[in-house]
Image (cartoon, rainbow, N blue to C red; front, top):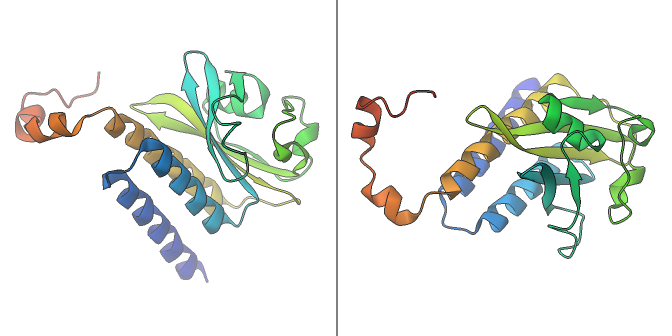
Length: 188
């Protein structure tokens, strides 16, 4: 059973990697990743927020109507999602997430009444650039592999966001050997 779950995780990461190399819109890729996470975790909801200045903006979801995307916003530190962004920590609540003192309600989102909540920061170049949430309607104990999975997905989305900033022409003209050997690839 454990080996089967590990193989499923590997397939999930492979599918996300394939999204990263296709020529799709960023919105399509993020929606695709959300769908994969929902399928893999059997959760009821997956929400992906990205940071715009000091706010987190809902950019992809399996439950929210398109009209809500871009409109649901919260400040870093606000709500459970904002806390994850500010603290740069994974957050797992197995039941009564809506009773947590950090919880913030959004009437546009049905998830406000969901029991279980798992959230990980989306990280790019060691900076938090967003947050990904997984929620279950009923109480759900999040195992270590599920927490690690969401953390890794958050890291993959962070890399994807960096790649999305590069135009095809820039990629075409980039000399990767020079980039590596010149030291430009070193951490700043």
